[in-house]
Length: 259
Image (cartoon, rainbow, N blue to C red; front, side):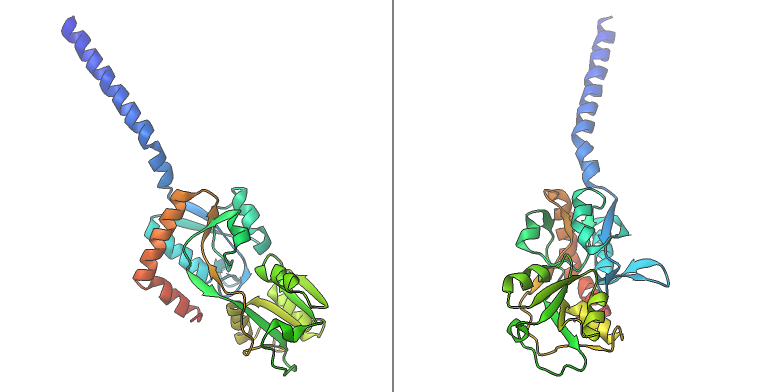
């Protein structure tokens, strides 16, 4: 009986060891998550927008997060989310990653974590097409009514700057362009690449981008994750580095005429 008892003890020991190893490796399975839900806006051309022909979200940031996901070994499920709802959707676990024209700021960094930059740009100024005045800085719009999109850094920056008759907030750049074209406000501020792209596509012929204007709110566009998601952030940063090194991000930027 002794040899049998010894065999049972050996098998029991082996089973316990296997269980311990399995329990220890369980977090690795979590870290190796194979898919993530990505929040993107439908009005951020050319970064993110809804293609009415395919009814799918497309754009520079959609292509970027897809390429980064491929490098990191996961697929992405891109979900349409209003810009102002992106961070709330992330912190409430409705989405896992934000891929949009969202500039990294100190205030936002207190709530969420940003990846390494994938693109950098500043604000653009647009006025009525018949307005031929040269606007080089915010000071040139003193005592005027100006506009900015809700949820962007430009709203706080304009209010902090002061000197304007009023800073109106809009749900979209298209709504803001309409009011500029109709003369309801003097000028509008938005992400320069988005404004430039939309106007180049004939979005609103009553509006023009002021080429002489010097951007003062330069910032980085990154992928965004929940605060403390260090493992996911490391996966993203490693994949972004690969996409930069092999020219993938540069090709995406060129494809969407952002260079």
